[in-house]
Each structure stands twice: as structure tokens, then as C-alpha cells.
Length: 362
Image (tube, rainbow, N blue to C red; front, side, top):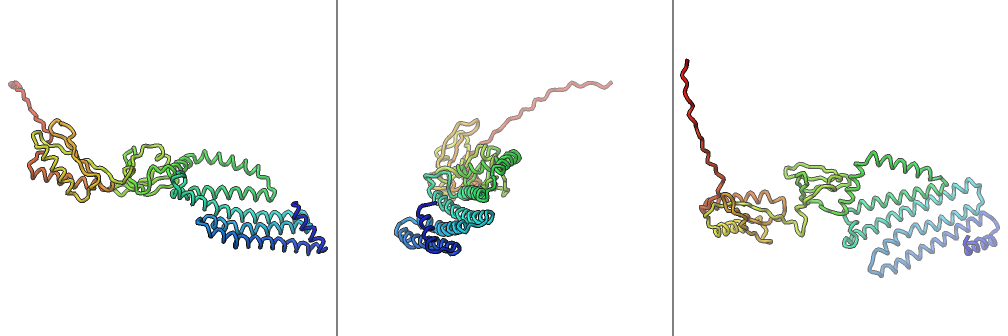
């Protein structure tokens, strides 16, 4: 026992000979200490923290203010119960109950404190890449599970319950569950890494190795959902998403997407005129981006055509089909109007016949 606490008890014994009055004085003394601590925290510390630019210290004080006050009161009650010299069973139940209340109070406080710290950390994505806005609920729930598990552990210790058998049973049960739910666990861990690594985000247009292409509508712990251009939703387990090549059409420095319009003109065409016409079609399209500007490239001498490619950008990948349709239509109309021939493969089929000798009937 602390020396100052022993002096306090000796002083109480000298003043009041009755044990019940001594117990009451112990409770009142700790109530006074708790009130003094409450005044220090609410008046002096709170006033000091308000002068700073940070709000984190005020939030921390608000979280731990009540647990400190209640803990001082609980300590006084525990000391008073021990001073009463009750029967061992009643004394054990009383002290264990007071310890349990204190554990629950501090568990709730630490849960709020961890949520606050995680929220603060998630705002600085430049330093903490793993914890950000999208992974915040995940880490918050994981820390809450850890805090609750520790609280239950300390509650069992407070009631002198042997936790060795419980922990061994939990370990065996965990091994059995991990084997039975290995696919679920694989999806869970893959989902954690997807949320942390962020190879794609909500709204991104992605293409999988298997050919599925669509907008990401949901990123969960178990699966990722894609909405295709046919308005069909595809659910892909995260264990697959974590082990395939993913092309993110919306990734990169911006969301713009480049479309390529391939067109061939006949040999002998005026290619300067072709280039100018293609550029004019691109610049006159309102759905194309002006930056980066469109460009025309003479790609190759084909078997029957001079192969060109019109390169231009649209604001979002979802627009590529509609814009490509409009450009192809306009290019064909302009080529027909300007008399520019678009060749197509032609084959000459020669039929060779052989005379069949005639035979006379018998």
C-alpha cells in the first residue's frame, strides 16, 4: 500500500473509531479526490487546451475525463469494501464486480480513442498509405474486435477464471474454421489488400484477363462488383481479383481515354487531303477533348490500302463506343462526298471446267 494512502487510513482511524464511519470517510475522501481531479480536467486543462490550435487534445480529454473520475471512485469503493473486512466470498464478488465496471469503462474509452486516432491517421494519406478513407471502417472494426477481446480477457482474470483452457479451445476452433472457410478467408485477405493497395476505385472502368469490362460499383471484403455496358452486374470474388491482370482504363494521371479510328484509303489518294479531312472531322466533334489534341498517323502500306489511324481522346471510357460510332459515320460520309475511295479486299474467282466424255447407252 502506498505510504500516503496508509497515512490517510491511519488518520481516519484516529479520528473515528467506528469501522462503518471509517468506511464512509474513505468513500467521501475518494469522492473529494475524484471531484478535485474533475475540476482540474474540466477547468484548468480544458481551458489550457482551448488556447492551442489543435482540437485533438480536447477530444482526448473528453474521452478520458469520465473514466478517470469513475476509476478514482471505484478505487475508493474497493478500498472501503476491503476495509469493512467482509467475508471472503462477498469481498471477492464486490472487488471483482468493481474491477469489471472499471474494465468496461476503460474499454469504451479506448475504443473511442482508437477510432479518433485512426480517423486522424487516415487523413494523412501521404504518410500512411495503408489506412485511408476507404479502409477506415475495416481497421476500425479490427481494432474494436481486439479491444473487446482484451476486455473479455481481463474480465475473466478479474473473476479468477482460468483462461488457458479457453484459449486452447479457441486456437483449435480457429484452426478448424480456417480449414473449413479457406475460400472465405482468401477473399477476406484479398479484399483487405485491394482496399489498401487501391488498384481501382469506385466508378473506374476495368478490364479483366477473362474479358469482362465494366464500371466498379462495389468493393467489399468478399467480392468486387462490375456493371457492364449491357447493364449486367458481375460479382467477382476478391481472391480472383487479387490474382489476375487488371487493366484500369480510368487509371493514370487523368480519366480520359484514347480511342483509335482505323481507316484505309486507296492507293493513289491524296494523303494530305485525307489527313486534313480526318483532322477536320475530329475537331468538329463536340464530344472529343481538345487537350490532348487529336492527331492522324499514317501507319502502314497495306495489301490494298494506305492504312491510317485517327487518335483522339474522350472524357471518360464509357463514351468510347458512342464517339467511335459518330466518327466512323462522319468519316464515311465525308470520304464519299470528297470522292476518297475506301478499298476493300477483292478476290477474282476463276471457274475451270473440263469436258466430260459422253458415253453411248447400251
